[in-house]
Length: 495
Image 1: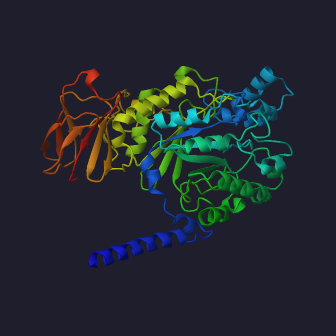
Image 2: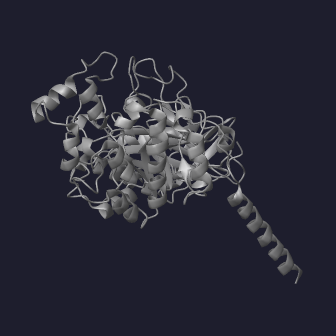
């Protein structure tokens, strides 16, 4: 009888804790908003897929090293970023040559037919890639929405959404339904601003309150995203966007108040300071003290860019090493694909995602649900660390090859990437070791076992001072459990 009373009391206590958490009300201050915890599943997920898809997928063109989803901006402003690399008129010149001088960007809305789009096929690809969440551009900076938005039509003064023009379908709903049949979390990218929206150009604060806020709420209430990736924040302060007020509504009153995860792009000066998890873009690693995410394309552009060649796409090996670098530093990798205007995901992008999925099927234990260990990696003893290309505006994907298997003269390499789960440490090597693997500054316990993940092989080892020396099995290439990187699980580590 006493056990039943104690058990009942415990249940009441746990329910009370859950109820108190659910009833917590957040205020429209950054201090209050920053106090909201990030759902643990996000830190466990480690790998997500970004999708940039909209009218810019019709021309699908920009100079290499630029974003094709910025086509409208490059076209109408006749400017390109790139530290003087470009004249600024490349997109305008291409547009005039291809479509004529009087062809409006807004005509691409009608041409964005999505006639081959199959949401279930996309969702299956996400699952096979090993992704735990995905993020679709519900609206990019051109203002075009993938769902029937009244605000889009009203402020632009003409139909400017996928339900009313082009596809004549609620593409966002189709994808939401398909993805939510799987275990993959459904996320929506949403741009706060729109480059050439008449109301934005006339009155930014009015645009925020009368366009962005109601449109954002419509998106949340009707599609119930697990994640919201805000962007386009940098052109106005959070006071203009009234971001704290919007987040207060999101966390207190919305249909996803208790579950939604958000990023840190909510106004000029907010990124890396407030909001949800931190976001880098074609960057390197953060220190892992705060949940974070690196986003980048498989090529350079996020949107599909027909101007990119096969050699502009990161290799399977490169992408796996990028994933290891990010996860070992406590972050998530959000890897972008750009479907074409018909809704086809280019085969080269599918191949890259499936290669990552194959690797994760073997080594996922060392990725999903892990956290940063006391150090992210083990550098070689000799050589300078952290090679990066000189003068690069963005960090190219192949920087990780220079830091692992193809170093420049005088530079060291990351010999081992580390992750942890409880008292277990995973040592992931980008090169198969010859005979022995020396892991510095780690101490095994009396009950430690070491297993080559993906096999049932137990690895012999000795502790020699501060170093753990593994006797590596002599395996042929066909006997190795995976390609490109190999994982040793070290259980019950003391340090």
